[in-house]
Length: 204
Image 1: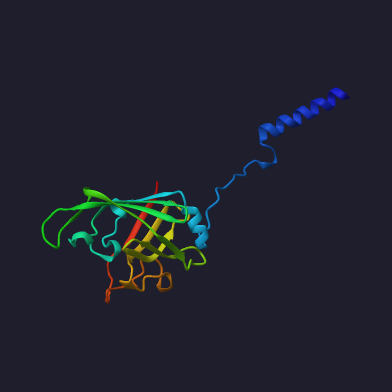
Image 2: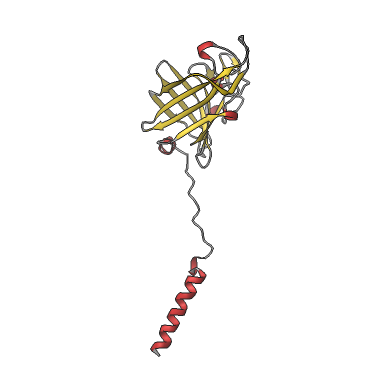
């Protein structure tokens, strides 16, 4: 009797091992971050690096045509890197692109870097007015001597961050209350803004 009982127990164990027990077919789905509060967004972003380059550079960064030579205010970029640390603090490094022709209206070559990188570090970052579904949030970045403001969004997995930004005090209709990121609701310096100011950053 004892030998029969041991054999039955061993057979049962082998069946569980081979068949996966009662949990066969179940998987542990990866959790998706919920970007529904400013705190959740800031917590997720801390310690991460995001890069904008190539086709992710919009035609009108900060609201200005990249093909306009505006001197030190030109918006022709090769790439922009953001390193986000606690606070939050954004260390932003901008590598400028190259103008291919002379004159005030020119051609911005995003593929070729010119000059030295321009580093900027925020003195204050404000994320607020987060949509209930996390699809839009207002952002205000303050630096020494200038600021950026607008609206943003994160992809569901947090790997892509889109920021529709304008220089502080120049735009209206650029917040989430006015519409989703990219909505044609913006007035820039008193005129309807028709360009694309959506800067798209990919997590590195």
